[in-house]
Structures are given as C-alpha cells and as structure tokens.
Length: 206
Image (cartoon, rainbow, N blue to C red; front, side):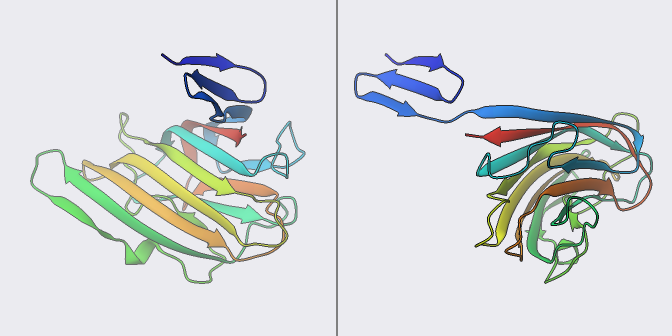
C-alpha cells in the first residue's frame, strides 16, 4: 500500500520500496479575460514569477471564448520584460478532428499553422475556435527552462476546442524560441478581436 503526503516542496509517494519525489505544481497567477485584447504574464509584475525559480512552467486555459469566428488563439514570448513579443521560433502543429454529425474526421499535419524561424505569434489551434455561446478552447502550454542563457527554450501545447464548423478538434503544437536570451514574459491573444471570456493560470513545476 502506498501513502501520498504533501509538503511545501513536493509530493512524496511512500511504499514498501522506499519513497520518491514526484513533484508538485505551485500556483503563481490567474488572469481572467473580459473582452480583453491580450493577457500577459510578465516576470516581476503583479506577482508573476517567470524566471530561474522553476525549470518548468505550465499555463492552463479554461473556456477561452472568442468574440467572433474565423480566428485563432496564439501566444508569443518576450526577452525584454514585455516591451516586445517578437522572439524567433520554429514550430510544428498537427490536429485531430471529428464533426458532430459524424460526417467528417481528420488526423494530420497543419502546414498552414507552423512557423519556420518566424517572429509571428504561435497558433495554438490549427483551425478556428467557434464563437457560439457554448463554444470555447481549453488546454495547456508547457514552457521549459525559460531563464536559460545557454539553450533555446522548448515548449509544447495540447488544446481541445469546439471548432466553428461544429467539430471537436484537438491541436498539438510544439517548438522552441530560438534564442539564448531568457524568456521573461508571455502574451496570449486571438489573431483578431478580443478574448471575450476565459481564465489562464500560470504554475511553476517543482
């Protein structure tokens, strides 16, 4: 039998074979959209930590709702405290789709959604999030060792959303910020119009 105990640093699983630190998530900051043009997490601002305190950071998206159809949810990083969100990136993007009426399915690479040494914002969904009252996007984005001044900064994302043509779509995005400067701010926005509603939370991973 195993027992799980909590302390301020980690989750420790105890069994007949000893104990292992299995890590824990530390809540840092929650931003709630309300017709917001952007949501930004800037290290050292409004209680945000995005530095060498943690080697891994995770953003969670809950019911991100656009104001209109035909737009994508995106993000970018900054190396100058949020003055500019224009870091060079290379990414990949593939999706799975299934239409509500079972008339269409898809699994494949989304060439139009990837980046090759671009400073553009990264699309976190291959197709458009629906703007109907009951449609939204939820998911996660992980950013690894953003404060490193030796290596590029890798990230992976997994998002599920209601597509505007009434598809269930899951989008898998991965890539890296091609810089050895520290990433000290991250911004989220739609390709046009505002984020009508939804929460984004930032966690540090021990």
